Image (cartoon, rainbow, N blue to C red; front, side, top):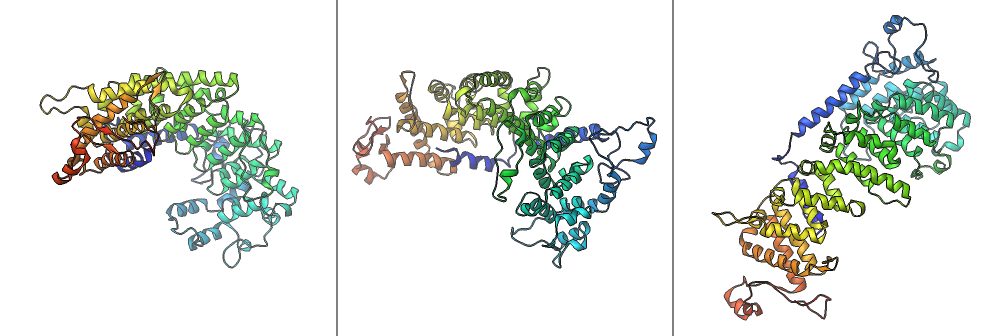
Length: 593
């Protein structure tokens, strides 16, 4: 049975329930993640790259320098790096201050999304455009004029204002590389690049804008080697803050994408010239960005942030393991529980799972394969040591599931998880909300030898209750989580008996064992039919059996029909305590047994 038949719906139904097995509440994790982010930003970014305050008299512009701090400096030597051109910083600051960015940001927060995708812009959006764009650039409908040229925008010094407006950003992109590219002089495009890349503050402001980041991605994709050097230094100088920002993290990912050894995937649907003008950044560009990720101070905040985790995943997927092995080193530190915390986080678990996926991929290069195997061994040693804790967690259990269901190099690790973590704990784990998912995966992907041990443990591995006489199967059939494990066991046995699953391993045939397990499940489920029909989970078990009976003429050991029907039925002659299977040999290739 496909997991979507009940496990996906199960997760959706149970997601809102209280977790009786969780180590800490979700709110606690969320608050701690927020504290990590705020602590880093307050400690590491209370001053900008030049050592000056990030704001001036409450200004929202992050790169405006305070005159008080400038007068307090004793050294006459400027702290400005030579590659940052700050000659126009005062003009840029005045221009930004006139954009009323704080009012725009507040109004954006209060705006509610439109329910219809094709609806025209609201009056509030048009009003904000009036605050940011000049009247001569708009037509009577408050839209950008069709005859407006890029040269006019450059002459008026409004590149930044257009980049931070929705329609203005689209105008810049279409004229920069889009449908109007053929009509734009190369010198005008170079002027625009100097506008956005000539000042670090302008670059960072556009990157962190919800609209401007898309324009900056196009600039990076079509930049020259000289411009790439400036872009690299801007990103490296403020890498952590850019990764944590919901808009700027996209810019960082684009820079990593086109500078990785693998060629980027190009979407040319919106431009015929995009593929021909795309510039592949040199590998050292991406290497410098990866190397700038702090290996200690804020790595936890980056891995567990809703935005920055995507940057880490991009690095893991696009670069060789030796470039990001510092992350594995951070995870496997013996004296710290970094792995546990990151795996238990909603976003951190994605980072760890991506590492496992990449390191377990087969590669024809022998040296690269050995390098991946070495790094994977380091990580899996730590994961196996914490397997039990990870299995019970709301998010970390997905990592264990992935290891169990992935073939190839992870087979040995899967077997170790089943042997050391799951066996002898099947009954208790099957009754837990998240661990039961892992047990289900194990019943599907375990090798036949280990599956036999798991089946035997459920059927015969636990002493029945002295008073009620209930065994493990009785408990799980009616348990809110355990019933899904029984469904999986039942479907696995049905698949094996009907030939849809392999039953031979290393010369040993497990077909008879599957028949025996199916017989036990069949008898128990039919015995509890009246009770099971009250629950949706019970109905699913009965449906599995009914489908098997209809398709393969499965004969039950007793008849539940009325006496009159039972007298005329062929089933009345069956006295065996075990189910009887009859297959139509003419219409199927299955054995009769």
